[in-house]
Length: 80
Image 1: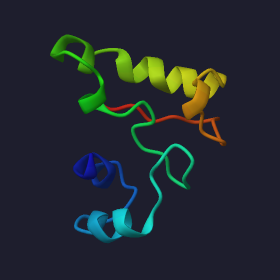
Image 2: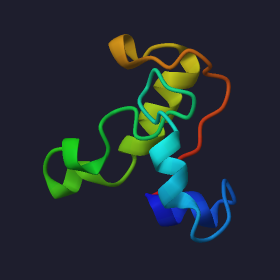
Image 3: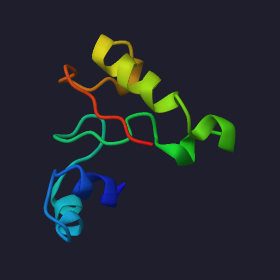
């Protein structure tokens, strides 16, 4: 995840460690990451990848993510 954030330009290479330490990445935080728990929470390998990320991003934008809904939901980035 860290490399993906750097490669997407959210911070310069090598700055992701301090960024993670100072940023709340929970679904209630200022920069939500892996709002559905990420691949470790995704079940078996076939389900952990694939289209699951797009579904979660869509749910967030539509306001249908239930208890893990992010407060600002007009944009989602999906990678994987």
